[in-house]
Image (cartoon, rainbow, N blue to C red):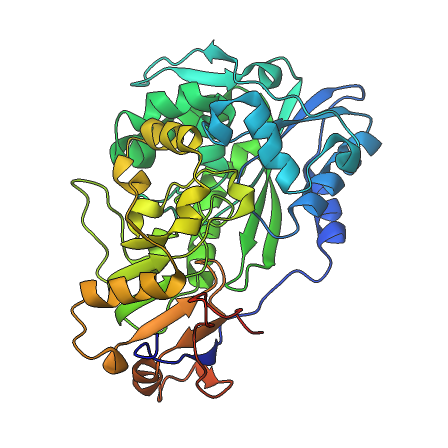
Length: 415
C-alpha cells in the first residue's frame, strides 16, 4: 500500500440553482393542473430512481389530490426493476420512504398488465392493471439524460408512461428492438397512451449537479411530448462532469439503481458497453474501480460490467436473480458481468493501476468519487491535482493524505 499515491480533497463547482421550498412548489404546480371530478380514483405512478426530496414530492402530490376530493393510491412504475416482482417493487419504494403510512394512501403493486390498442405500433402496448382500472393517472419522474442513448426523449415522463407503467411486459416488448426501441419507438407509444386520456398530468423533476431539486413542473398530458425535450436540455446543462478527460483510474465508492438505472451513469464515466453503439468521446478512463453496492439497490448490481475491478465486499452483496432479470430485460448483458473482484480496496486500486499500464504509480492520474451523482467533492492523486491546477471550477480543500487504512480499506470520504 505504500506504493499507492495519496489523495487530496478538491471541490468542483457547478450551478447550484435549486427550489427553495419543495412542498410549496409541488402544491402550487399540482393545483394549477389537477382537473378531475370529486370522487375520482387516481393512480400516482412513482419510479425506481433515487430523486432528492422524493418522499416530500409524492406525499405533497397525494395530499393535493386528496384535498380536491380524489381517492388516491400509489403504484410502482419501474418496468422490470425490483427483481420484476410486486413485492420487490414495493420494497424499492419503501427504501425511498414511500410507504402507505408515510404517504397517507394505499400502495398497489402488481406485475399484471392489460394490453391496450396499439394500432400502427411495432410492439404491444401494456398498462399496469391497477392503473388501467383508475379514473386517471399522475406521473412523477425525473427528467435526465439517458444512459443508453440520446434523443429528444430520454429518461423522463415519456419513458415512464410506456415502460414504467407497462411493467416487465412493456420493457421486454420495447427492449427487444435495442436502442432503436428506446429512442424511436417509445415516443410513438407514448403518443398513443397520452392521447387515450388515461394520464392526467406529469410532475417533472429536474435536479442540479449537487443532486438537489432544481425544477418542479406539472405538465398536462396533452403538453408532455412538447415540453419534455426542453426540460431534458435543461437537465443536460445541469449534469455534472468529471474535471479531467484523461484519467488513469477512477475509483467509485458505490454504484446502485438509486444512483443510476445503469448503476454508474454512463454520461459521467464515458462508457456505454452496448454492442454496436459508439462509445462516448470523453472522458477517457483507462480503468474503473467500484468498491461497494448501495443498500437501496436491493442486490441489483447492474453496472458492475461497466467497471474493470470491484471488491469482494461488493460481489458478496449481489442478488443475481434481480441483476440478471434487469439485464436480460434490457438486453444489455455486458453491464451485468462481474469484473475482477479484489479482496480489499487497496488491492482493487493496484489491479486497476496495473491494468491501465501505469509503470510508476506516483505519476498516475487517479480520481475518487462517492458515486456518479455526487461530483461536487472529489479526491485526486498528486498527478491529477497538477493537471487540474488551472481549472477555473476546481478548488483544493486539503493536503494530500493516505488513501487507505492499515487494513487496505479506503478512508472515509471526508466532507
